[in-house]
Image 1 (tube, helix red, strand yellow):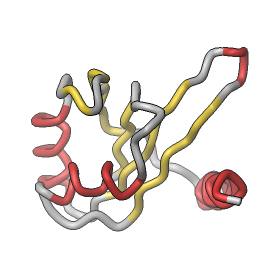
Image 2: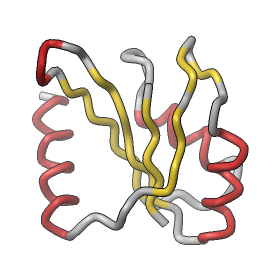
Image 3: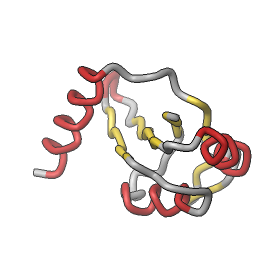
Image 4: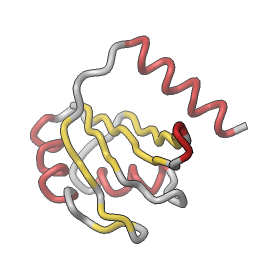
Length: 97
């Protein structure tokens, strides 16, 4: 299951986000997107968990939680196509350079 996590802190790392979700089960993919389109910085992420029940438990518990001073928005995401996943990975790699 893919989970969208919105309203992330600019200081939050992918590893920190992963830790929040591994408390509920296995996490297979985490990415954080730092989008500055439109002049307003927007930080959000996606987390993939293979178990739907563990993902739903994470959503229920983490929705509205405060992390690094920001209130999280956590919902089930629409499935991403293989092309979108590749684009996200490429964007993430370019941000790390």
